Length: 230
Image (cartoon, rainbow, N blue to C red; front, side, top):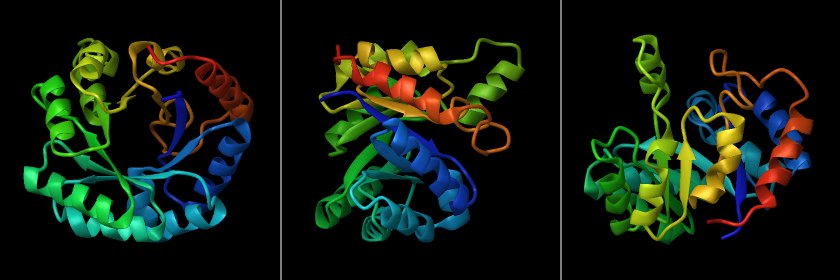
């Protein structure tokens, strides 16, 4: 697949999310993500508002589902989400329920391997259970905690090639990537490039980053879209 740019709207109010989403779409972003903070703050109303404002744009609902998978996926799909996220650390039955709901309601399933002891095996397990995409993810708290202890901050790039080689579904790398690293993801074989904190969202305040965000996003989108997936 051609490289895709997704912006993670890790914001806490829908007005700011809509404003940032409009800016991102003008800059050439392909997919919108209702980030976990936005879902916690606004719930289904946030997803519905994004769908109303952007009727043809793919919308990822970053639910991080751990249980009650069928209902959560059904609710988000009916609200307008085209993609939902389930965690690899959930029970296999939960993943299966999300996959079933995805098929029933026309929604794709993204499986997130965050906190798996074996990230590569976790990605393969998600694919085997029917997920349409794999999110290779180093978590926010994990990264910050390890760095605060004086150790090297882990990066999803550390095992990204191994994850890509282990699965046939498209892979997305998430977690503390620099701008340069995010743009490089298609060269690792991961076509879904996510822009969130700290690239476009202030990682501490969960607000839209300062600066000329639209111009920066346009340059990023051009750089990603010009690539082919390795």
